[in-house]
Length: 209
Image (cartoon, rainbow, N blue to C red; front, side):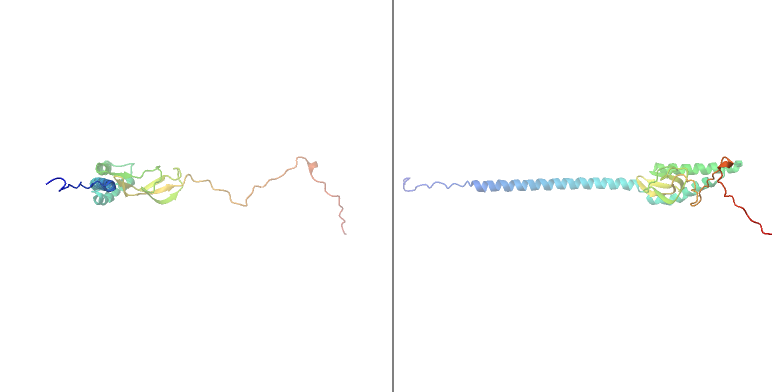
């Protein structure tokens, strides 16, 4: 057999430039999409981790929320008792009792502070609706817009207001009353000499008999 009898046909070219370019573009698009999906998944996982961490911190910080609310009336009672107690002419027995109440109230407030619960509301501080509850407004010696008097202390647990302080808000010093309208001062004019008086007409009066 000769080469002429069995001629070998040349292999057809299989390279397609257009097809190769299309395949590369498709692969690049799929790679970009996969990369974007991976970044989204990583971001979602990070957000989930941070959210879980924040919730855990808040759970630890506000775990005593209800328990603290149950203790606030006790703190209020001790505070009112100390405010109403007389301070002068005390016998030794009552003085010792008052000292014991003061120590108890101080120990309770210190225990609150150790667990993130602090007392708020002080005379003279700027009124803040987030931590103050205005009961009324009245003139006083404090500047306008500040707390004139604390009627009931408030408490904050962490950065959350557990109970707002009930306060009396000052409107500033009382103004002096204005004089009533329609009352005007009278001005009198005096003549310095009798000659300054206006001349009277010379008239005669006839008397009937």
